[in-house]
Every structure is written in structure tokens, then in C-alpha cells.
Amino acid sequence: MSNRIIIIVLSIISVFGAGSIGLVWMRMEISVVAKDCVELEDELEIVAREVHELRAQYSRAMRPSSLASMVNGRLEMPKAQLTYHVSEADMERRLGKSSVAKRSQNHRARGEFAGTQ
Image (cartoon, rainbow, N blue to C red; front, side):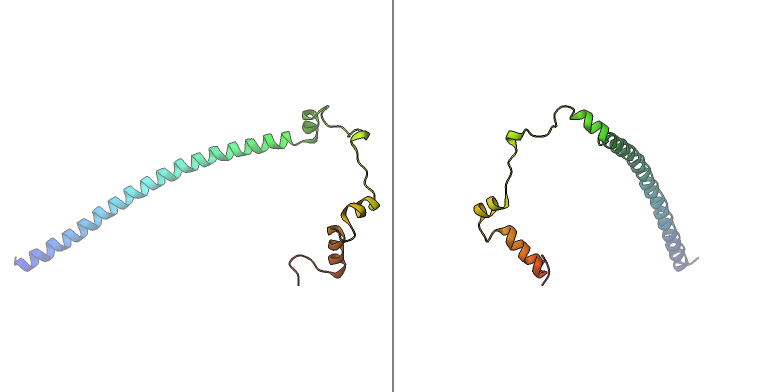
């Protein structure tokens, strides 16, 4: 055999050998990534169960009966001496004729709203 044929055969063998080693390396990397994915899916399932349990606890805590039992005796109507009644005349006297409330009503009457022109 001539040197040329030997070089061609060795080149072909080395190309196919490098390709085979590359394929084996790729399969090993795929296995590592698949293992990591399984671990992450397991962790995701655990976290999802915890979130579901927390939502159930929140739902139980926000029931009207649960809320009523938590604030039992602490919520009541304010006493009459702590209640202040303000008349329209008092508002005008304290805020004046050009109050912010009156100005906002004027804008509403003209059809001017935030973000419109």
C-alpha cells in the first residue's frame, strides 16, 4: 500500500473516531441535563404542593367566620362622642369656594378626565 492510501485510511478512521467520541460525550451531557431536569421537576412539585397548602390556609383564614372570630370583641361602632358630623356649610367655610372638590366636579362636568385631551 502506498503512503497516500494509508494517510487517507488513517484520516477517515480519525474522523469517525472523533465523531464517535463526540457522540458519546453528547449522550453523557444529555444524561446529566435530564437528571438535573428530573431533580428540578421534583423540587417544583414540592414547591407547588407548599403553595397549594398556603393558598388553602389563606382561604381558610379569609372566611368571614374566621375573620369574625379573630376580631371578636375588638371591632365596634365608634362612640357618639368620637363621631364628628360635618355639614356642607362647614366644608365651604373651611375650604372656601374654590375647593379641590368643587374644581374636580367642574372637570367632570366638562368631560375632562385624566389622560384625555
